[in-house]
Length: 287
Length: 101
Image (cartoon, rainbow over all chains, first blue to last red; front, side, top):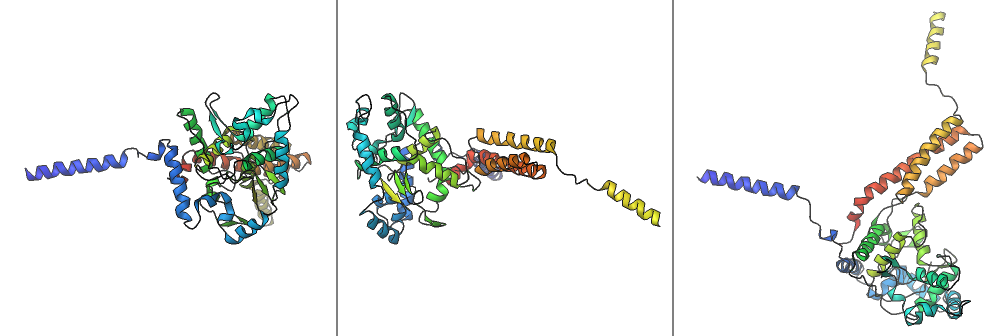
């Protein structure tokens, strides 16, 4: 009887082990949970860089290197984005041919609202970025859209970011499966390797922030969009979030997508959401 | 002895792989294969810049009448395009391994 029980118990144990090994793994992260994702994302950086204050992450490479930070603080006396900021302010207040202005297209007259972009438009079922909203505003008022990557678009977003400086990023994900899908799609894009270099966004900005890649010090992904748009010395000019995505793709030898493609809009949604609570610092200046 | 040496040489020459120069037809076939793979990669939203530039180099060489170079560049472009397709396919699941959790 004893031997029989032992045999039965042994068989049962073996069956349980076999079941555990062969059943599909239940991975909690497979369920779309932006709150948990944002918490994990922020904790990763806070733990990796315990000496960096949380709000300093939005200053990109300057949060990673004291010498660079001192140089940048001196540059901020006469910031290189100042011309774009002035131009953006003037453009923002100059009426369109029909007499309306950008202020008519945005909540609160477009002042101090940068931290709410991008948002998920439940009518359209897609993510709407600030750059996209600005061009839609222009087209709705009979004006031609601007290039998404630099010049006028960078100036306008620089001014709008400036009016939101210090406000915490506040991106909402509505209770809508399409919004969750957009967030998940952005996350997938962020972690997917592409290009001949076989790099993902995360290869540089999660695995290696603070490290050098040639002459550049890599910025952490956390808060990386809070400083947009930026004056980049490498570009000798201003660039938008769209420009940043396009150049990142090119640098990995991947053909960039079209600015404001669904993938870029979604990755902006993901990156902005996981930076919720960190202050807007744009416009920024980068090497 | 002389006759057998000549026969041996003739046999060797006839059996050796022919190393003829590539012609326009070779180029067109190689380019079409590369272009098809490149289009497949673009359809997966994972085109590589080097595939595009290597395809352009192939066309330029062919336009200049250098079909050897054109065929070599086409084959390289096809290999690059195929590598980008493999990357896009494997990343459909592999990206999850990089995720912060």
